[in-house]
Length: 370
Image (tube, rainbow, N blue to C red; front, side):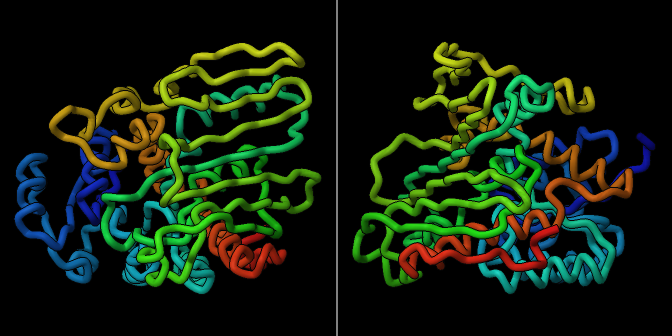
C-alpha cells in the first residue's frame, strides 16, 4: 500500500475518542482534527492526545480544506444531516450506525455519494468483530457447506443512556443484528415482515409512538433461497447484553454463546463442540494490531457504556479504521458502502413500519438493492 496519508477529523468525542489512537498509529492516516460542541471536553481530549486542530462547530470544520475525511460519532438523529453536509463539502465520510433514521435520508446519502464520487462507509462493528471474521473464514473455506438459515439478535437495556434513546423503536437501531446475516451471505435484503411483542413503560411510548418491548423481523434475501430472522429489544426485557448471530448450514452450524465470556458452539451433525474464537489482529498493519484487545475505554476508571455493554465490540475498531483508510488509499468502495449501508439500515426502519402494521410485508427500496 502506498504511503500517503489521509487527514481525518473525528466528530463526537464520547465513543468517538476510542478511534483517535487508532488513526494516530495507522500508517496511512493523519489524526488531524477533532470536533466537539463542549469546549472543555474538546480541549481535554485534544490535550490528552496532542491534537492541535479543534472545532466546536461542525460547519466550521467542513470549511477546513485540509480535512480529507470525517468520522462521525454523534447522536443517531444527527448522522444523516452531518453525513450529507460533509459529502457536499467534499469530504469522505465514515459514520457510526445507523446510517440514518428514515428511508428518505438513506436515499439522499446514496444519491450524494453518486453525485460527488466521494466515499461513504457505515462503521458497523459486528461485521468486523472476531466472531464474524471467524465464521466468515469457515464459510469461505467451505467448512460450513450451504447456508440454510441465519438468525441474529441484539438485546440491550438502554436505561441510563442519553434521553434520545428513550422509547426508540427497537428496529430503528438494528444494524448490529441485520448486518452480519446480510454480510455473511453477501446478499441484499429484498423484503421484510416484522412483529412487535410486549409493551414498554407507558412514559417511554409517546416520544416515538412505539409501544413494543421486542421486535422480531424475517428478512427475505434477493435472488436467494435464504431467509433470516433478527430480534431486537431496548427496554423492559430482562436479558444480559447480547449481540449475536447463529448460522445454520449443511455441514456445520455456529451458535453464539448464550452467556457473555462463555464459548460459542460449532455443531457437526449431532455433535456439538465449544470453540474459543481466535483474534484476527494478523489481518491488520502491525502498528494497530494491539487495538483489537485494548483501547481508550478499557480501564476500570475510564469506561464508556458501549464498552461496559459490548465487550469492546469484538476487537472491530482497528479493522473498521483499516477498511476505511484502505478504501480511500486504494480508491475502491469500502464494505459496507453507501448502498449496502442503506440496505442494512432500511431493513430496520421498514421492519418497524411492518410491526406497526401487524406484520405487513414491505419491500426494500430499489436504491438499496444491486
